[in-house]
Image (tube, rainbow, N blue to C red; front, side, top):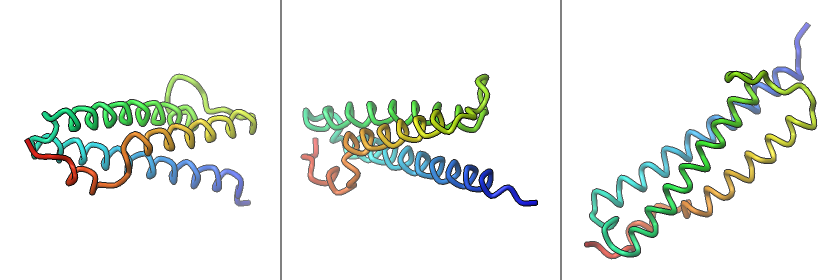
Length: 115
């Protein structure tokens, strides 16, 4: 007998993990571009860098919530559907806040003045 509910939960968790990893790669890439171009050392670049670091913090918190959902940490995976839904809602909020801070458009780095 196939556990479809368990398979759906595993698939959803994988999708969120992929989403989190993609965002972390994007934010780190933007930080790297700011640093390599010297733009990070301008006033606007510093503001952008701080926003990106805050986005990374939010994404780390999202990673901790994903571990909690998977039961990978010291806390066992939640069983109540209400708790699971609350964690996914928190993840969506964290992703939205991180996206807003990161700008989610790599072209914004090119618009900043070079040092």
